[in-house]
Image (cartoon, rainbow, N blue to C red):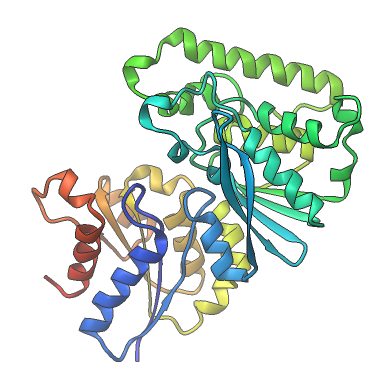
Length: 356
């Protein structure tokens, strides 16, 4: 009996991790009914982070009325398990909360993420894990900090915020960019947060970067330390910086953090194959993204790893990195709008394991 572990990332805008895993499991079991298949929902900090951690550690989902990136009231969720809270910032400050024409990082705020932090602290959480991914914002976490100050501070000053002193923060991200400069949040990720490319001007990106630089300089003077160049500072439009600078957060690879939580190394014992994947796989996959995090763990146990994706580029680089096989789920010539339909994607995943 073969033991097969399935740990596929979400196909953004198409399938969740759990849906992709289920489709792969169905295809495998149709071909090999005797196989022992283990499905592991995964996320590196972005879409599906909350669900992946709930599957891994249990806990209860908490719903809170907060503000979205345009300060409209919405209901957002986060996870509590014992004294640990898990927050997926996309639930409060994410691009998916906005219509395409509403996307504008010049005005979008991370205020709602701060409200989730406040709620978790008030419920007694002493450890807060934050998945940074899919944000609509590029405000360096200023909105988040404002929400916390308004909730806790007596005189509108961060020095008054003592309630968070006993809370440890861990941010989960695959982004290593600094806050400012040509490799920073505004220049690298800012353009992705606008409604359309025609809405972006170089002046807008420079304005976002200048705002980040001014905020970092003021923060460094006030707190006596400067975290703007730490890995992860540029994640989620600078939210990573706010957590590092103001919360003394630890920055971790999202997938490594999750794999440790679920004791993935134990799952790999006596495994014959791991199947992972993502929507689009190329050389960037090897720069700390979820599939390569799984690959590195599996290699320690000499377990082969198959990579599947809706789009494949740089196939030889992926094979050279150690993936046993690299497979595109979509048949040649299939239009993108068809491939992106959830039922089509599920069927394409099933079929590759049936050899069709």
